Image (tube, rainbow, N blue to C red; front, side, top):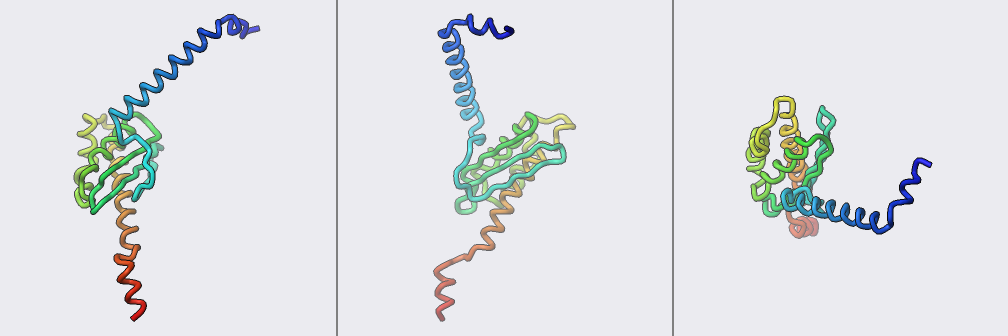
Length: 160
């Protein structure tokens, strides 16, 4: 009985409403990607890290690195708005930087400046974003150290 009013709404009205909802969501996604391109998912990153802060917010950073330089970065954040903003800022700050320069370029203070400042109780978001980014670079360096530097050279040594 409580849902009788629903059957009285013309199908065309429901279809138009659904179409408008899809249009609004589609435009929101498009604008979000234009304004914040690092929020996009990344296929086959060279490295990634996912950390959860003491506050419960989780951030994930994925990087593509060529010749020691971050060429692309993406993030995912599950938490408050400042967490997402800081993750976006940290990834943006890393793009185009050498992996040696990223720690300074995306330090918590730099991330905080990039988002226009943070209240005292949200500063941990900038630290988590910076830490997640640096963890991704650390993992990249560990992977590189574990991989043979020159596979052909290693194979040649084993035959002598």
